[in-house]
Length: 218
Image (cartoon, rainbow, N blue to C red; front, side, top):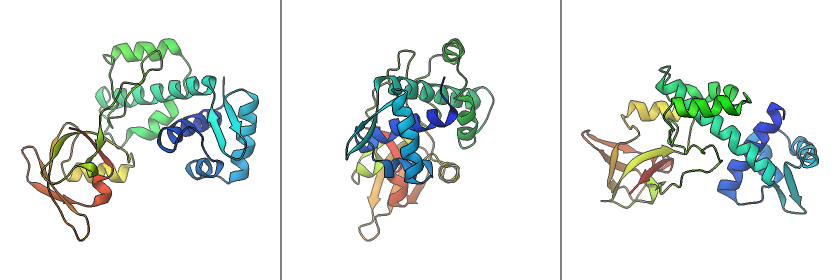
C-alpha cells in the first residue's frame, strides 16, 4: 500500500513523462504538485527507497517498472470512475474530476475489474482520455491537436488537454461536444483566431489557446 501523496506523485510523474520525456526534472514536478522543490526531492528520495522511482544524476527522476504499474492502475481507476459518474449518475463532464481524484485511491482490483465490465469496457473517459485495460495497456490514439490542422481540413473531436471546469464549461457554452465533426473554415493571420464549422451548427470563432487544447482524429 502507498500513501495518497505517493500515488499522486506517481500519477504526476507518469503524465510528465508522457509529455516531457522519460526523465522528469524536480522543478517541473514541483510546479505540477504546487510545492517547493526541496519537498519534492525529499518525497522522491523516500519513493526511491521503495523502488518506485529511479534517479539519474544531474537529470532527474523517472518511474521504475513498479512505479509505472502503480501509476497506470491509479489512472485506470480514475478514468473508469469518471465514466461511471457521468454515464450512470448523471454528473457533467466538468464535475467529475475532483470526485474521481478521491475514488481512484480505493484499492480493490476486483472492484475495478467489475466496474470496467459493468461499464462495458470503455476505451476512453468522458474527456476522451484513453483508459488502460486490466493489463495496464493503453489504447493507441491517433488524435492530434486541432491547431495542427490547416484551413479547409477537418476532424472528429476526440478529447481535451485542458480538463479545467472553466474550459469544459466554455466548450459547453459553444456547443463543442465530443464526437463533433469540426472543420477549420479559416485562420486569422493577425491573431491566430480560428473559425470552426461544427456539424449541424453555425460557425464559431475561438482563440488559438482553445484549438491548441482540443484533440481530433482525422
